[in-house]
Image (tube, rainbow, N blue to C red; front, side, top):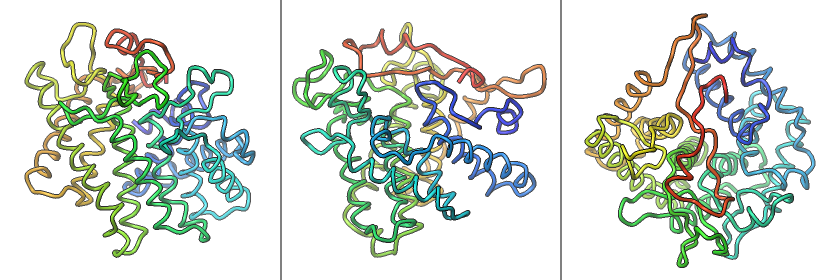
Amino acid sequence: MLDSIIADGDGISLSGAATSQIELGIFQEALRQAINANISQAREWSSYLQRSVASSAVTAFTNVTMDVDEPLDRLSIGRSLVVEQHQNPNASTLAEIKALEQSVLQQPRNANGGLWYYDNVNNLTAYANLSYLDGMFSYAPFTTLLPSILPTLNATTAFDQVQTQLDILYQRCYQNDTGLLVHGYDAAKTHPWASPVTGASPIVWSRSLGWYTVGLVDSLAIAMHLYSQERTKGLSFNLLRQRFNELVRAQVEAVNASANATGRNALWQVVTEPGAQGNFVESSGTALVAYALAKGVRTGLLLDKALKQSAASTATKMVEDLVQHFVLENANGTLSFNGTSSVASLSGKQIDFEVSNSSLRKSEDES
């Protein structure tokens, strides 16, 4: 699949889509992990990665005020820049990292301290006071990594901030009957869809659930790698590890519910309605959650043997489902990954089953 992306010339620069920053950030991270795991193609892939990083640097995240106007997705590229600075120190890259760090400090927050996902100055009515699960894919690992490159920052404090943001969303978005998380919340409760009690949105969207879970497990794994053993035994780490275990259990149950109802070991666009008319299996959310489950097993973050076994089995079945249904071979020998929804936003006035499933499905080469 990576060779197909490279053959198509994708992942070099921002695509122009609303999700382009997070797309580029996740591609660079995936490519780095593949390079570390595949010696035979490391040289070719490393060259492509350098082109991608150099291109993303052209976005010049050195203007803090302009950075704040971008979604939290910008920090997925910031994470990549931190890793790049470790491997190839550069004054320009460091300046971008520092500017992004300052932009987080200036990011608007709700009264409860939760970060806005997007300070859209052109449409404040739609986006003000909205916190999305999506933002934690970018924010949490970036902030966890920052003290490794900015020694004036305290690692414990940084991880406490990560825990605070993840837990605010967890508590506001928690769905009591499933243990899953809905897409986000409106702290001001002004959007018609907002719960009058919590401000939460009504729908569990697969990809936002995946973004959050990957941000959570990646942050825990980074902390285990970078921080001392004493720090990883701290309150914030243990609380987030517990949250991760709870979420994994709920996600395994959701996939099992889909398998029992439809025969598909996958997550649907609206996760809690597998097989419902108009609903569809969403490939990107399924892939993100499969990754998170497998990483939880591999890194030892799952606390009991039974959960570890069920997570490993479920992740394997999810990957098999993805390969069977969504990985297609093109006439030129490259591969496409189909079945991803284009976007799902909370900025609209109506958020329900029909709106969530009106999102267009697209193939990898349309992303």
